[in-house]
Image (cartoon, rainbow over all chains, first blue to last red; front, side, top):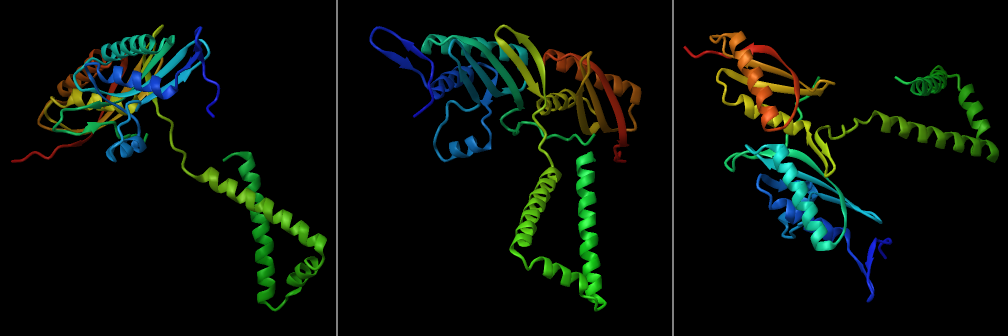
Amino acid sequence: MDQQKPEITNEIGAIRIADEVVATVAGLAAGDVEGVASMSGGWGTDLVEKLGKKNFGKGIKVEVGDYDTKIDIFLTVEYGYPIPTVAETVQKEVKMAVESMTGLKVSAVNVNILGVAVKKTESTFEGTDTDKE
Amino acid sequence: MSAALRWVLFLYNLLFLALAGMCLAAAINRPEPLGYLQAALATPENRLIFGVVALLLLGLTLAVFASMLPKKPGLQQVVIKQSLQGEIAITIPAIKVLIMRAIKPIEGVRDIKPHVSQSVEGLVIKLHMAINPELSVPDLSQQIQSAVKQYLQDIGGLQVAEVRLLVDDFLATGR
């Protein structure tokens, strides 16, 4: 069985929310923000998506604690959008969505920008490390 | 090289020296060392000791192999902002993409290789590039430095301390 997850209790019983559900809510909220090109889930997740199984929690890492929740987001930003503005909007939208839909308290939303997507005619650059120094 | 690795290599050298000595002796028709080894392996207790030593050597060899494998570097990133809401960070490869986009509109520059590091005052950007020799190098350099610094500050929200340029090569001019 899954390890003990934090739960919301009421007079009828207890409600437990899986991390995957929180990740899906956060992923959908983040993906809707203007300037976000895509969520970065890694090559394994991309391969599974190509086989037809959509993963809305891609690029999201959730830690649900006893009293609060921490969310890490990995995404690619569209070229031309100011990155701090996009990231702050993602933080606000994700926090609002998760708190309103799940009732969990979100203590931090950490946004990690992994790449910049250029125009659709060119490919997405997630950066090739040319460092030899 | 660490001290532990040096000791391991020293032990390996001793072992190979002993092996080489035995093989050399056998080659010149002096099989006494091999005879001593066979005599030593005749008793079960000695065979057990040899087995344990062999296993230890095997473990040591595997550990040395593992330490020699190239380590995948961790994802380097730069923190743009920290607030009560959380942290906003950007990876070094993403910063390089921004640098390339900043330089793209500038004519007369090609083969750009950016290198990004961090200092107390902010980012230190080093650019290796090839430029058109018919253009003024000081003017072009200043244009590139301003463009990169401004773009990273405006779009990336990043503090740039320095932009250093190194012109490796000149572009071939078509005449």
